Image (cartoon, rainbow, N blue to C red):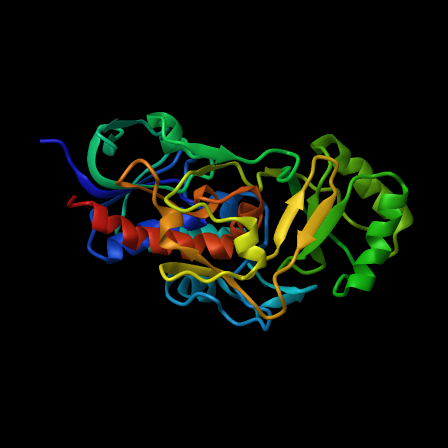
Amino acid sequence: MSVSFDIAVIGSGAAGIAASVSAARAGARTLLLDARPAPGGTGGFSGLTTLCGLFDAQGNHLNDGFPREFAESLAESAPVQMGRVWVLPYRPEKFRALAVQLLAPVTTRWNTPVSATAKHNRILTINDFPVGAVIDCTGTAAVAQTIGADWLSTDATTQAPAVVFPLRNVTAELNSPAAVARVVLPVARAGLPMLTFQPNLEPDTVTVKFSGRPEQVLPVVEFLRQNVPGFAQCEAPRHFTLSERAGRMIVGRYVLTGADVLAARKFPDAVARCAWPIEQWNAAGTAYFRYLPDGEHYEIPARALQSATVENLFMAGKTLSADDDAIASARVMGCCLATGAAAGKLAISACSR
């Protein structure tokens, strides 16, 4: 007889880790598969070094349970305020190691593309394994595409990818908006693409998110060396990563909207909280931020984590049911942890239907 699973989770980034661990801890036989060779997703492999979306405007945790457990296990320092938001600096290698540790009770399959069969609005199998319910955490709606379920998408007009790389031997102070402006304004005046800086736990190192093309990285680094104090000795990056901000979202029983985010809307079936602004980037590298009212957060309803047409298909992270504006807030990793943990619990109820 074929091995069967209560829950199959597709994608092992922050949302997939949270969904898998939460389902397994609730007693579900859980399968996790990913096209990558190891767990981690954006948090482990994009080059990012800050975990965003965990905190409210005062730096307090918005979501208890698994999101807080994961963050506290990952933390080596206190949260850092960046402008109007708080972030948690972390090491990508520790993110990957923590994922492996937490996923010990879960059956995993790596280097594995997803296939699925469905009948009468239910998914029957994932990669030939009979399953009770499925959670799509791919960020690309991979399961929905396989079975023909409805999905929405973003594009480079609002969610252009970023090139991420570490920049070492930086002595410039970058801990205030004024200090950062002294760096980015000369770059902008030179007609070069926009860049932003994030904390990095390595000494004299910052993480750069660059809105240009990969082949423009070295010219920008050389410009910094020649023209900006504190960058004269910085090392050209040996590697950089293209980080996708968002991709495709599955249409759910409720589609979270940008209006919900900006109104700090609350829901009777809320399962997660987020206070991150709507953060959109176009292909030219121009950023557009829209913030919630001071001190506020919005909620994500359970209905936004369940497919509108497939009764045992759930989704979390960048794949949750949201419009182009809402996903520009809810896509951050802290929120992905929260929606993943919620989806892991919600999906169990669909296993016996």
